[in-house]
Length: 193
Length: 193
Image 1 (tube, rainbow over the protein chains, first blue to last red):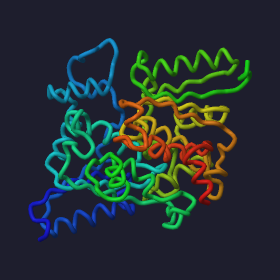
Image 2 (image 1 turned 180 degrees about the vertical axis):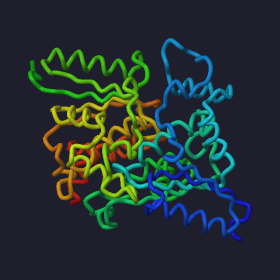
Image 3 (image 1 turned 90 degrees about the horizontal axis):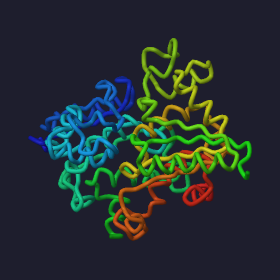
Image 4 (image 1 turned 60 degrees about the vertical axis):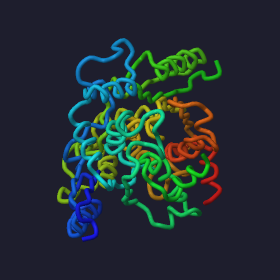
């Protein structure tokens, strides 16, 4: 029971339960459950999760209704507890989690838009970071994250000399995004500071 | 009239017309128009563009309704002219363009989800590429693309020794995606083949 009491959030972005991604999610749920973890799954397509960052993410009045600045308004709304309920629910799941697993197929060298929208909207200033208080000093420090992804190509295609280039190169922006990863390019960035 | 007769598509992803991104788009429209280009703007937020890649992108029946595979179904739908009308309209704009300008603010080291969704859904197999017929041999070969983006940080933060790392590192997946860019990391990938 290595994971006894640990909380895991799986942010899952595939349309088809019987896909390889769906199976990987199911196996993770079963195995982590066996180890004593409690698991929450955000099944983004099933939730019809909203990826667009818009004025609808802020309930009530805006601090500057004349010129809409998404980042500014969401930051203010976070502090006033005036974010839309779908964002608040996801932030609560992240806050409670010890480990977040992102399960997705690679779309154009990155996450599918529905998952990018989860990152854009949920990991907002005030919740995930502030200035100062970002990257290695971000507010999700201490949590772990795993990128679990499938590709449409072979391992060789995603090697340094392969046609797509080293998978670590295009995972780097994603690893930086989580603010919790210490391996690969994330460590290189840390060394460059 | 350096651009006389040239066709330009601006894929624009900002919520606020009076933003810096909005101004950059407006200046591009004015200046390219002055040079004799014809310009089309896809204003993604104003269009409420759908970023989610779902079964709704295929009109009519699926080739495998039992197990939904987005990539397979969209490829088949492209060949049968059975893609949803919003995708078809954007593909037509891309097809006609000599130059595509992506105008966006950087969200988590990449494009906002609404623009990622444009890339995921519009640049589908059959239209933008095939196997074989991808990357340097993709179907948009010969067109030009510009990434025009704003950041929330200083130039120094996005330098090689800056806290965010070299901007070229995290633009690399985006440059590869366009399949048209020859500079920077794109060229490095070419050399590695």
